[in-house]
Length: 281
Image (cartoon, rainbow, N blue to C red):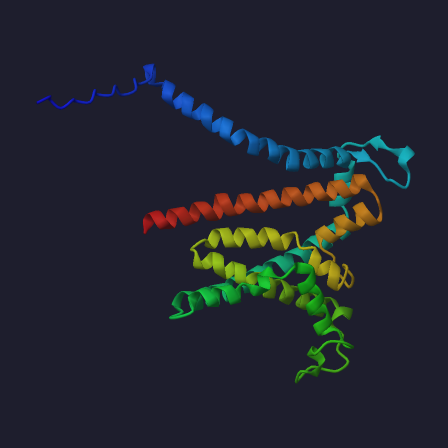
């Protein structure tokens, strides 16, 4: 009877000399770089180039109405934007929409998340039905709320305690109210889903960034009239309507910087404090 063969012992990888990286680790790192390279290159092409070109344009005096007057002006466009009362007024309007909508969505989203979590039966159907508003295209939702509050075609005026002559889109406060309600109605379901998954920080970050860049709802309902212009609407008006590529690109870069600062605050400040609280618990 033949003796059972004994498998040869595998030789463990040799540790790196002087505390360096082993050959196996170097090989795995190289493979990781090769696998990530296509995605990184695609991101650089899709996002890096437009941002870089926008920054280049922001350093130019470039108005398509006067193409022969193009010249390099450095940071002059940024100085013009930051010294403008229109810019800071639009920043204030954007912050009102952002803070109000995100705060309301956080409260309502938490309540909906608790309902979905405690649902005894039909949990999948409940979650699917709750997400219906989020699945509607933003432009369609904005038009629906606009027509609902329109004095001639809407049904809101027929509700009790609502005046027949009330025209919400003729005043700043009421226009902002409808804009905020539209944003809350559409994105609260997604906020609830993230909260249900325990991703509170991700939910706040996502919605804050999304609300700060709000465009479709404001453009459809008021087009920035009655003091409802946001920074995104301002950038659109300067870049598209006034065809001023220099100033418009400067506004776009400033919005991009603001988004980066908001994301950094959430990740570095709120994320660190949340991790510390979990560690203490």
